[in-house]
Amino acid sequence: MCIVTDDPTPVPPPRRPPAVLAMLDGFLDHTFPPDRLAALDGVCDLLSPEPVSDFSTPEARDLLGRAEVLVGHWGCPTLTAEVLDLAPNLRLFAYAAGTVKWQVTDAVWERGIAVTSAAAANAVPVAEYTVAAVLLAGKGVWSFIARERDPGARVPLDHATIGNVGRRVGLVGASHVGRLVIEYLRPHAVEVAVADPFLSPEEAEHLGVALMDLDGLCGWAEVLSLHAPDVEATKGMIGAAQLALLPDGATLVNTARPALVDSAALLAELSSGRLSAVLDVTDEEPLPRDHPLRDLPNVVLTPHVAGAMGNEMVRLADLAIEEVARYAQGRPPRYPVTRGDLDRIA
Image 1 (cartoon, rainbow, N blue to C red):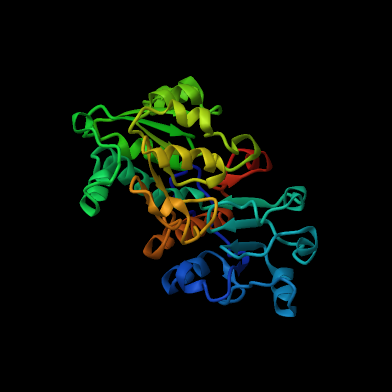
Image 2 (image 1 turned 90 degrees about the horizontal axis):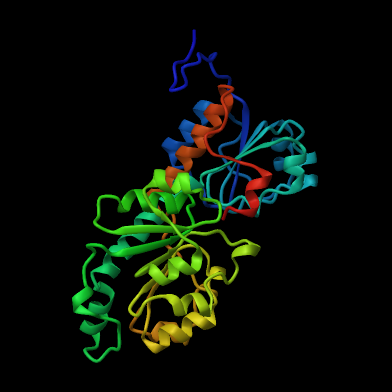
């Protein structure tokens, strides 16, 4: 008997590798509700239905000693060399969330453990949030809301330019999120350009976007949306000079990381009323109640909610389950993470 998949090469019936869950205490029902937990157990031998949150307990040590697969989520302890000594059979770390930077160490790569991430699944709601923010900004909705609350509010609002026909949307980063934003904006009559040093002209042409350098993008975009990772090369990449290049009335959307933006320079521009912003991430989370951003009529603040929440969480579980199933079938992962990726992913 062979299993037929989207891969034309027949594969033998899958085995069920022993697996362990690791995440925050009390978080299981939010991430792997009963139907997803059953689905996971269907593609592996789940050694315990209860996830591990502390690798130092006798129970955790026993489970790790038998595990071939570790399925992690938020709160999964870091995979240090000492932890991996307890898991000599571990071959796959399937992370059912976004960045693995807080879980993975050099020891993981040195021992040849495969790593996968559900960042692509988490990108879906972030992209949906972004597109909504872009379209509402183009329609002037944020400014209209501010004026409805306070007719005297000083907010950018030029009736001659309201609307999204020909709206110039600049994306910083062709990440999972950035590429989905491009896709989701395609039915709309907007122009899209991207700044990303890793994006080739051929890829940009395939995506149907213009490729610009960062300063050129800032000078062109009426809405600038950030989708770059927080790495050394990107810290403060949107500084006073880049903000000054943005046209009057432009909107900055940040669903990525606060470190990408010079916070003081952004506050100065927003306080002047020249620009608007939709900020899902800020350099303090939550912002202090007396922070000046809270009082600006041209700023929309949300508390880091663009990523997966509520019923969206099952997408992350589904992707992790798929990765475990592929491993059990002897197939390569769909979304692998390598050591070399860490310097350019979120």
